[in-house]
Amino acid sequence: MARIQIDKNSSRKDVIVSKAAALFREKGFKAASMRDLAESVGVEAASLYNHIKSKTELLHELCFGVANRFMHKMDEVESERVTALEKIEHLIRFHIDEMIHHYEEVYVSDREWKHLSDPYLSNFQNQRRMYRKRFAAIIEAGIKQKEMKAIDAPTAVLILLHAIGGIESWHRSTQKISAEALTENMVSMLVGGLVNK
Amino acid sequence: MARIQIDKNSSRKDVIVSKAAALFREKGFKAASMRDLAESVGVEAASLYNHIKSKTELLHELCFGVANRFMHKMDEVESERVTALEKIEHLIRFHIDEMIHHYEEVYVSDREWKHLSDPYLSNFQNQRRMYRKRFAAIIEAGIKQKEMKAIDAPTAVLILLHAIGGIESWHRSTQKISAEALTENMVSMLVGGLVNK
DNA sequence: AATTATTGCTAACATTTGTTAGCATCATAT
DNA sequence: ATATGATGCTAACAAATGTTAGCAATAATT
View 1 (cartoon, rainbow over the protein chains, first blue to last red):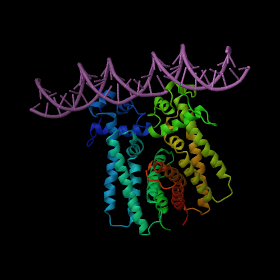
View 2: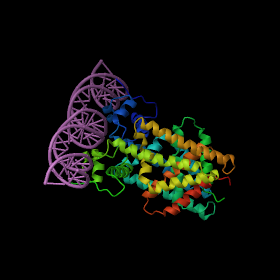
View 3: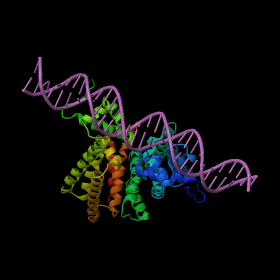
View 4: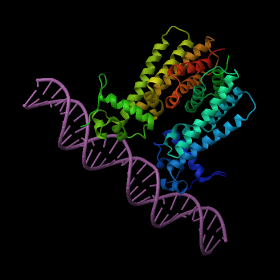
């Protein structure tokens, strides 16, 4: 009889959630079936329900796991006693790092949250809006201090966040430059686009 | 008896494809059903098949319609007799313009092409790869001419294309700045991130 | 060793899905 | 006015989907 293999510090549910992230990333939430997931876990579809309540619960776990990490980082960065530009760079580096090392979860959270259902959906959207507002506020502070050029802060946020999402293409490319080189190139280009030269 | 309304220069199929773009953008290709589409067109689901062969054909039309427009523009820009930096700016402006005025099609082509099936899938992926290669080549030329700073060209392409995809958020935001302001802000930040200051 | 709680399997379910067949209705051209 | 092709409708289909029930096997606890 098949059994879901676990290593210490991770429950069987964790294994399922993690496999779900990979699958949802590859096929999209809607196109990924519970039977697909079961196969990737090495078990029959019905058996998954001993560990999870529903397919959507998997999406909740992924989306809010990611959202919470970003919110926590925002708290941290906001309380740093450094220039606005440095705060922005810290956030950018965090985003890049997350996108490199927790690719699947972050990607799924970013692209598939539409398939959440209320009240989770509104909740998630609110968190997202808040996060961007706080991000924009830092940029506006930097503009006021003349550290950055006078651009529309919400637009800058949108550019930054989506640009970093492009790391998806890096993951899928056959000839990857190193993670460090990728990071420095991105930071250089994105911060370079903000500063008051 | 219901009838698909057409205005001159657009067939009934065009109407369906256009409604499909809006629907696929909103719900995603997999989650959007033919019955949804039929309702949005104002007709019964089965009636759609008098005009189209399959659901996937709709995705083909959208994806290759967009891809062709971008390829055509690339041909045009490559043959311009201007600096590499100007070529890049032209491409950026074209992307922004497409994303503003043909939002739904471009967005769907960008996010849902995974659901194409071979041979269309490979075909589309190839076109995409080619486009990015040509884009990167222009950047590399600009670097050689010292117009831009020495960054990894494929990474720069990935940043540019994904950043512009962020216009999606602009469309959905309640308080939009004008399309012109959006364009100039984006160009300023993206070109600013490239130039050798 | 015996009992209990976890975990997995088979079978089945109700829905939803894309699509087709067959027929009715409309618009257009003769 | 009649014929013809285009367009629409109802009904139905097979396949795929998420999920549940009931039972068997395994692991954990006493």
